[in-house]
Image (tube, rainbow, N blue to C red; front, top):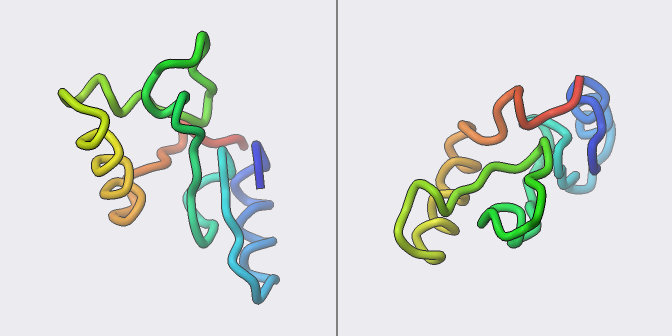
Length: 84
């Protein structure tokens, strides 16, 4: 689900028996995905639903690990990375 309001994404996730993957759909989908260019800040414009993970580290590998850690812990995405 891309750029779907958080509450709708949660309803869809709850209704379906298959995994639901979100990109800009809030934290309540079964999984999260980001385009690598966006998550590393390489894109000309950072989408609302993305965060530049490379600014907080010194390598691409560490940035990818930080993304995975934040998704697993539930600290990403935050409300500012989602649609209402």
